[in-house]
Image (tube, rainbow, N blue to C red; front, side, top):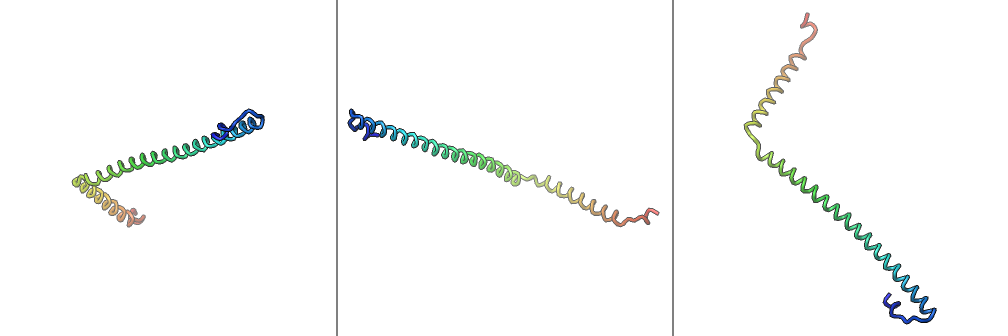
Length: 109
């Protein structure tokens, strides 16, 4: 474009060459602008993906901290009580099953 602007004009051939070179330069500038927009769009989508991954990472970090806190701050008395109650329930269910499974119709007669 610089060469076309610096070239002398005044003759029909020089004017036609000037118009062609300026049109060619403007077409190249338009294509370069479109290429820049395409690259910017690609970069923008990558930045959005990085932001989404960052948010997901923060959420997982919070979840892991809560889980770790729940494990470290365990109420041992409550945990032992729950375990004992569950064991008692299991033993009662097993004993009931074993007694019921030994029954037959002859026991009712």
